[in-house]
Length: 46
Ligand SMILES: [Zn+2]
Image 1 (tube, protein in one colour):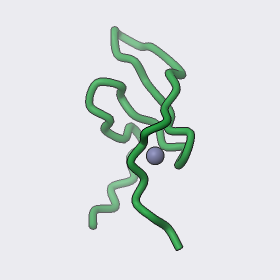
Image 2 (tube, helix red, strand yellow; image 1 turned 30 degrees about the vertical axis):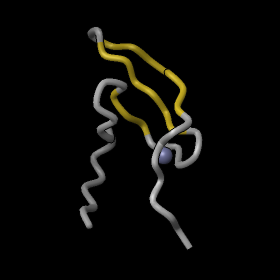
Image 3 (cartoon, rainbow, N blue to C red; image 1 turned 45 degrees about the vertical axis):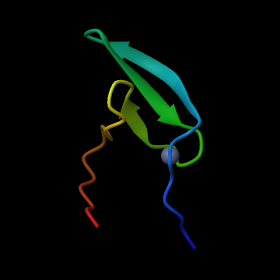
């Protein structure tokens, strides 16, 4: 069973053009640090 990840544990992995990118340690998703929007183009909307 998968539960929705709240991305509470993140680490910064990169910075580009003044944007910090973070990775969630729980689900391994990559986000922009500012808005926690997934960077990967995996548009699975529920
Ligand atoms: Zn997560």
